[in-house]
Image (cartoon, rainbow, N blue to C red):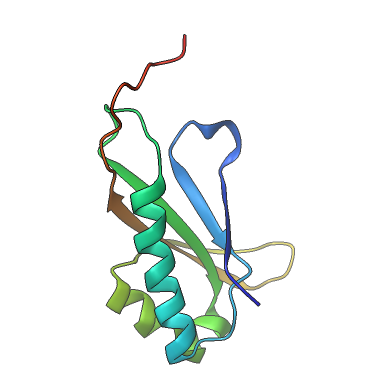
Length: 110
């Protein structure tokens, strides 16, 4: 199983959601670190946006299985925690902001 990511709907905020999160191990932590590096170097963003953001959502149970410490090591910050009324689980949003490379010749769409 590998990480997957997609843009938030509307492409308005620059946030990308990482999902399909495998069980934590040293290898999956390294895979996430490499994905973040590749992601930040391959994104095309307007010159007015200096960073790009990756988001991951975890249940409390998954965080207890090694991800909480791994996310801290990788620079992710917990931004919000809430109760999911559909499942009763507590969910935790973690966000990592990365420097966005400049894009030569970018033209803003009207």
